[in-house]
Image (cartoon, rainbow, N blue to C red; front, side, top):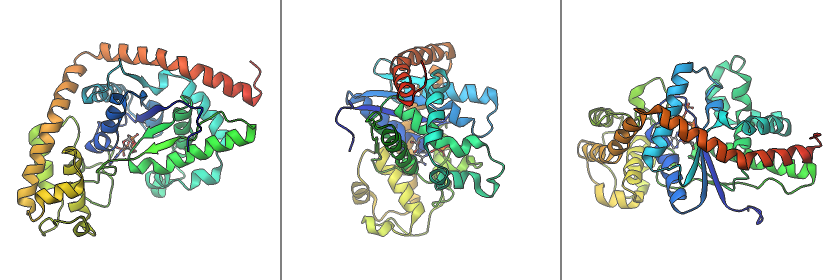
Length: 338
Ligand code: AQP
């Protein structure tokens, strides 16, 4: 439970480590917009300092950061209602990140499955930043005293670590300073899978472009990727139980349900019994109708990068009104002479 003295505040972020995918949209951004529109105080971040835990070409990083900002705005986030920032313009994230690197334990970090997945057999050669990433992520959240964090399923473990860090800091210093944040993992598509392999998460850095739908893909590309998506030879079931052991079928049904704002049960009541030859064109049509207005708006916004930069600079100023006092108080609690 979040401690009662903390007013509800939402924070979440996405890495500008490539173009936005349908996974980011359904797993995170759609929920960001809902929480903003419910009137909660919301802060959304392009986490560029996280992106550089793996090599980023500088020109690509700048373009991806602006494109991500355009994706946020085109999806319905507005600088009038949400604070929109890129992480490196708000230095308190990295400063608190260092403090949390000193709070988190090696054993906690070694259990992080995302590090194991990303480092693979190459663990000795990846950056130290990739290993320490969850401490910076905890700082991103707690520098705002955020109480709610909307994310996809893959971030659940990092949010548990964020709670552990807050608890340990509060315990070690005998304070009730950092809130115990609640993850918000909701909807039919909290884990969108690769279109080529139903056991792998759809990811912006997957080497295969056919594995994902990018938010900037045009209608033909979306239709082609869905047509070629891996499936099995059976018809779709009418009951959710019929999707067990059919990861690719389940993934496409989940995507359909999330795009159509309905439950998986409602989707199956509609499309159960259909062969993929019938279902895939329906899904493609739905995806295009939902995504093309967003990609069109993204292209319009990307034509004026200076305006995006102004929005991010203004967001950083607003953010620092929150983050500077939280960092100052953190240092004071720790005994740093001010
Ligand atoms: N496939 C997914 N399904 C549902 N949610 C997803 N998210 C990412 N992929 C999926 C959610 O999007 C938010 C931002 O994620 P991120 O970009 O910061 O990092 P990530 O989870 O590592 O995403 P990628 O696409 O896999 O990036 P790369 O390839 O650079 O590592 C998070 O809320 C995440 O849950």
